[in-house]
Length: 331
View 1: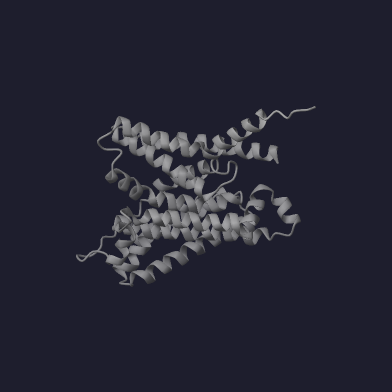
View 2: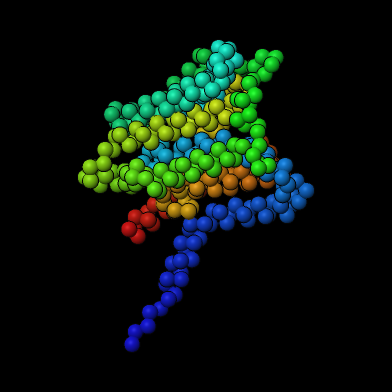
């Protein structure tokens, strides 16, 4: 009589548990460590609010970057798009006197148009997504300098409309409202990727374009859609950034590119290892936010932040590649 050994199954379950939720556990461990080391400042509601406020724009930008990654492409224009989006919001409201909702709609439409242009360059002109989006990003940066003449945009004596600033500085259930923007956006993207046919198509395109073509999936249409969604989300991040800063600075935006990509890539190693996913991206942003906030409160030098982001990016790329290879080998 043969008896099945349950040990391999237990080991597999443990491995899946660690692979799926290890990054979440890391976030909890980091928070606990910094709470012990910095008991007076770190585990406080004021610090939690500050972290959420500081990293909400990065989280939204990272969620936007996740969608093209699902299809196997990268959008390097998001940092430049963030810079242009926030100055355009302020230019239209402050200089042109537009109502802020109308200005926001134009910025959202412009972001989606830039995303579509990226998709067209990748799919019809057949330019590699790294090169194509880096090129369009440079153009966006040039447009930012042109429309601002290299100068900052300051609101008048009455400041910005309360409706616009309220997008960022309001609270809901004692937490900053941007936290709920992040959660809502992640939920919408999760629904799209996991529960709708469009999400299945995007994942198939990213994992096996040849198979997607053979089963009749219109690859070009969905890749362009992925870039358009990325541009739309980037436009929203630009609006929120304008509400946060309340000053238009043509030189900002690039500082947000690296952490957003780190989070998007690192997020593909958790929840569903080997697959870019919104909730994994949110957890990755939490790890970055907790780590950098704790390090900053410990008195780290200014260069520690880019060092942390760079090392984390290398780790994220390595882990994402390993997870993808492991997933293919188990398929």
